Image (cartoon, rainbow over the protein chains, first blue to last red):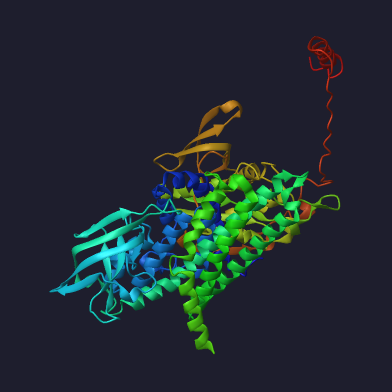
Length: 378
Length: 262
């Protein structure tokens, strides 16, 4: 169905669709096969203004809003989910700076992100702090006019390429004693640890970040001491719209792959889509695609209107990511043996989809959030 | 440099074409987009502006929906535009439309270059550019694949594409009309900030009367559409059976005496 979009939203969607078709799709399979970070594509996307879509013009952004952002990510994820997650994390890292940054921090760290100079990263997860971020151990100890950081962050998207990393670290022993910091790339004492060998999203960068007596000026504290978890959770709310959009784009890709194959492939004397069991699978993917689009659009719309959107973002993220896995499963089933072969796009989507129910809050955490927020409504 | 780019909206060729009556196409089923050749002209104009400064003005004629194409040119970087919006002009032929575009260009009070696509993807008439040049009494060049502007910003060196991969090089002076061929450039994607700014750019709406356009509608036209139809395709094929030698003889005989091609 056609969503009620503004002229700008349609123009952004159409431009990104054309870009994804012409500049991402033809190269996506190769980048993923080689496990290579698509620096060239990202440079172009940064130049088009896709790194800081929610950032105001004054800081080099487009102020295009969450709905436009979601539409753009969907189009990109249709072509390559790895590029989509790289963009999602970059846009996510602009938000805490915008919300909590001082004017100086915005000039120094937000402008280069929004103008596409480099990607951003968000370092929250640790080996022993995943769904429960309050148990994180990385420490930031005040020393004169600096903080000295020690610890290890795990599964950090864009970690090797980010120009700035938003780090959440412990500044006091109590449960809420976490603070957020802006860490420039190349900070002394910051080391990129091992790069993970993942199941999917092979053209995205996921690394361990090791902080060994990494000293940053106290001016790099983002927000006030003790506000770390608030900064993190706010960013994650927005991030969920990003991942819901990525997953929705992937359902769209599964649908178009399955549809074109099922229309061409003939067995028992007719196109397999004319066999009811295959037609049903196509119908199910189409329904999930529409539902995911609407839920994501609705959450992004709330954000654009400046009203609370946590519950809706979690609903969209939960639904779209679970549906992306079901849809990829069905689409691969339609392809039969050919779907199980490397180099078939559906094989890549199937692997890429798997992580979407895990990162930026597992499905279980989303249900926790939805239950809590729903209880508040009663 | 002050550069005008004439932009036309054309049907997306993936659309379903349905003929109503004898000479009309049902537009309700059609998705529209900017004529590709005009997009090359917009890009060429923007590149000249980036090099020499000045402004790029978009002029387009058509119903309300053409604002979408004009805004797209704005998003790419054009400065402002004129939308000639009058059903009486839309009802006319290329001559009427060209006359209206010329009045809009004249209202700008002196321009250096007028650029447009070599032709529209839909009617492929390749008339508007040359009509406009003649009416403005500007020199013109069609099929342009390369533009060099002299230091004085008044002399142009133009490559023109010919059949068979040949180019010819011409020198001409501004003001001039150039019709742009594909291959001259790769049009840029509009940036997000560009898209967000496009809506705020000035777009003047002009009727035939505002511009003092005399020739309007069918009365002002030089041509009249009698009929539009889908050509019937005829499939004629004959497979010549038999051994190779005899078949070859039959084939030569048929080519010589029946098809008369050898």
